[in-house]
Image (cartoon, rainbow, N blue to C red; front, side, top):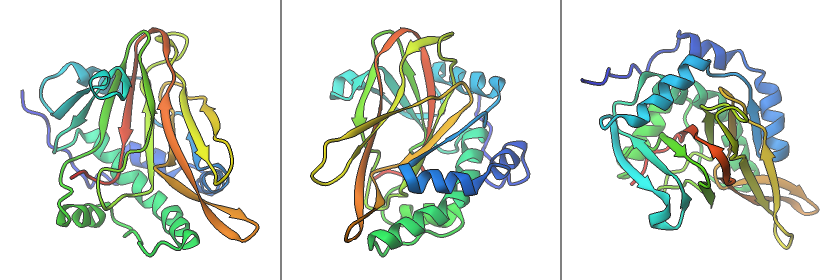
Amino acid sequence: MKRETANITMLGSPLHERVKSLDWNQVTNDMNASGYSLLKGILKADECEALAALYLQDYGFRSRVVMARHGFGRGEYKYFSYPLPNIIADLRVSLYPCLVPIANYWNELMGINVRYPENHKEFIDRCHKAGQVRPTPLLLRYGKDDYNCLHQDLYGEHVFPIQAVFLLSEPEKDFTGGEFVLTEQRPRMQSKAEVVPLRKGDAAIFAVHHRPQMGLRGYYRVHLRHGVSRLRSGHRHAAGIIFHDAT
């Protein structure tokens, strides 16, 4: 069976309209205040189930990672190959231009000269010219006692500083435990942890590695990591949307 080629120009799709209709002023305020924002009900139940079901297929993925083999935690994930599934491509293209103003503002405040184009294809072209040609969107699968250690998804020289994760399973029904966790490290301070209360179909958008924070002497960089706490029972699926490609 051949995977349907993803149409990366689905700007009139229902999913694109859902993304466009979000309160992006509130999202921007959340991101600037804490480095993350919760997007509720972006995916419908049938979309979540269709994405989760892809994990059992052998085609459409470029690699499979068993976390325990690399010290990443327990559980596993698969990176999609190009062409991406329609829904993954649509999310990547629809979310990106909404996040660009935040990303460029952050870089300005942190004194980073990099600026991001409004169109995702232009940014991917930048990645590919630098040898970052492997797609990074992924599906993750966890079972009982699985977890994901705190980490950052960087993958190369060109990094878009915001990413998204979509929960495809229902807490307390499909699994228990398995909370999405963010930690924040400020200079000369202890780390702060926060649990993001995702439900099935929700997304968290969050800083990949750092964000600006106002201090007494101006803005400085706050470093963030993310992970998943240990599952107590059941199975948990999630989809990660990373906007840069990997070397």
